[in-house]
Amino acid sequence: MTRTSSIFLLTAVFCLGLVGCGKEAPKANKKTDEDAPTAADNVKVELPPPPDFDEGKVAPKYDDGAWSVYGLRKELDANVKAGEDGAEIEVRGFVQDIYEPPPCPEGETCPPGKQPHVWITDKAEDKGKKRAMMVVNYAFTIPEFDVKRWKDVPNVVLNKGQQYTFKGRFKRFSDTGFADARGLLDFIAYKGIDPKTGVEGWIAPPGAAWHPLTIAAEEEAQKKLIEKVNKDAAKNRGG
Image (cartoon, helix red, strand yellow):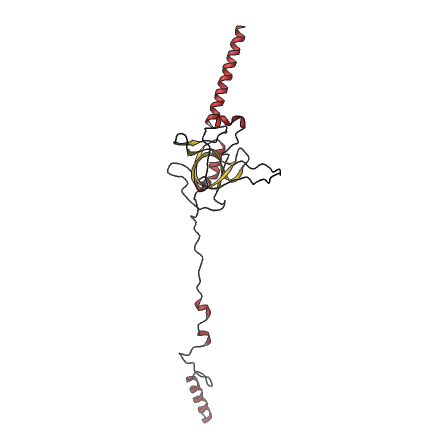
């Protein structure tokens, strides 16, 4: 080996020991700009809470057998079919809203308002109509000639925010033209206090075709008609 070659070899070994000739070996504790803290280090990532899948849900039925709105709609098709077949059910809910016909300016002719109806919900704090259900046909107009007959009959009185138990037929289409794909209650009666007796019982709207007073009047009229027909037939036989 020549002297020149020996010098070159020693130089190469020496450079390898220094981790590259002409370059300064990095210091272990030296921090670069990339290691310095940034504004992102102070950012807190807050994820939204997981959705509450039980929100708005209640038991399908109460202990006394009355349905909840949620329960009726949970078995929508079956309950609607039963209602359309004439089945009467009980449902309990809070009155969320009461329909009021829009005011008619004095001197103008306005279209008649809709039939009285209310919206009920399973929870008093429920807002909007997403979980609300219509209860329709709970009040009727009494003609003047018939007012006296209904004077002392308890009326249906509903107040916002109060819970009631209703009896009716669960349908998509009411007998008076209301419609809701999620179902509505065609009203028959509700549990209330008779102001005369102070006893709680089922109160039907005065003037309704199914009110006990209406049914009794129809039965009485039918009875008188049968008596008259029989009497006339007896006269004809005798003549």
